[in-house]
Image (cartoon, one colour):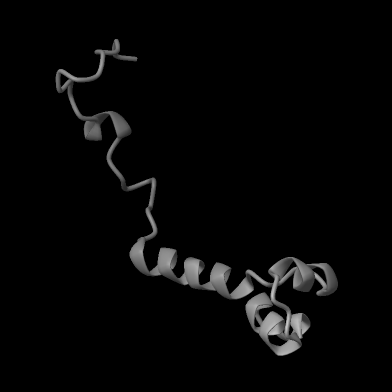
Length: 77
């Protein structure tokens, strides 16, 4: 069941296990169990970020924020 992406909780219910530890002992680990979550995260990152062309972007020093009085002042590079 785990190889068909059935959750451990659902396997435990189907097999009548009252303790999750018993189910975890007998179910095979499925290495792709996080594939759906990884793909969802990848889609979210791609949807919320834009590619940056470093050749056209301003220098990092131009975008730096000056001292705010909270953090220690660091000397310029």
